[in-house]
Image (cartoon, rainbow over all chains, first blue to last red; front, side):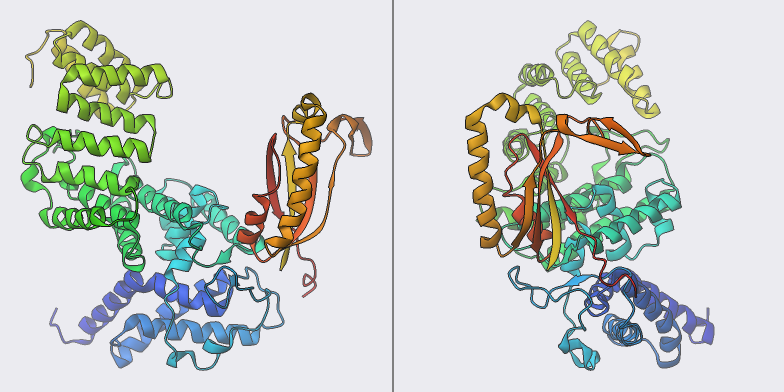
Length: 442
Length: 117
């Protein structure tokens, strides 16, 4: 590449358009939806604006504010479509409220567009509607899988084929899922707005859960095309960052971003060269991403300092991840501090899986007997029956207590519950070890 | 404003076994709900309680049979037709609808006014 030939310029423009797609899609679509009043029309207009950008930016150069340029172009198109099609019934009308207050009556569907942006929208300050878009996509009236698909499609601008690949479902299945969700938004009149203070905690939790689900799908999946999965992780962190920026006072939004950063900081060390999953205690801590850890830990410290009642589950999980990330080694981890955090997490989010993790921290802080007593209580509870990590955790504590025969039996139960080859190999090695067939590994 | 149907699905045995006190309490609760719809800024357009499914008759392909369309643990026991600004508003109202032995389903009414266009 010479750097100044026409080909290089073309590359530069396509890179700028691709970058604007990644960074600005949500902003452009959210602002266009307000004018278009129809999700499908808004999506088409935004797609067209990106195509037009490729041509216009090649001729005129990349504008200083690509997002504003794209929004103006997309909104102009949306207004044109509206003028031409005013008498036609729209396919998927979107319910736009004039104000953001929950009590303001909405304009009837099919009403003319709002007076403001209709007249020369390029001069107006374009409202940041990304929050409305996110809350609409994650409305509780939509099934979780539909929330996830819509968020990727509308907020991240991913094509249906990409979303289908990421979730390992056939493309027609994903297309039908997206269409059904859009139809429900329109037919049931799910409003395009940020929920009021009374509903906000529950509704925000749904948004955070969707983003977290995107992250874990990309992070833990053992199968599927790797690149797409890595992209899912990046998208989830991008969404968490966006939410934290748009809702700076919501400590759970901060907690989610911190949790994702702190977890992702360990990404490179989660598996060995042969693909075997590495336990936290086996990971090479010198290869953890220190910048991500510092950013995550800062977010946690800042959020915990806030005085808005007890911290929620995302912030507490982030605080736990921060303790792990900042410990010099597994043995030198601040287990009493972790146990306190797990106690709080169990209060905020009383699930048996949290109780199991707490039991492990309890064993590290106060000895294997303490953890074993917790695990026996969880077994009596019965909700985790068939959950392979329960007998595996029990086996590990028995092994540390030197009760090798009991440990081997518990490892065998765990082995019978997993179909993951890496986990099977790990458990088989442990069984051999406690049966005296191989040297003990500490 | 849009119209929504609130369908009340409940275990019929709850009322059959509950006796007159349960009936009386349900009557009062529904009377209160009718007031709350207006207080919440919605409008009550109508509603009825239905006789139990033991009185239902089904017609399918012109064949008349005894019983409801599908036998389920929770049966449709009544409905309200309300007007609300949007789904959030309709759900806010429907949350107040009494259904001690089950729950309610909220369905938007299909708008046929512009379908010719």
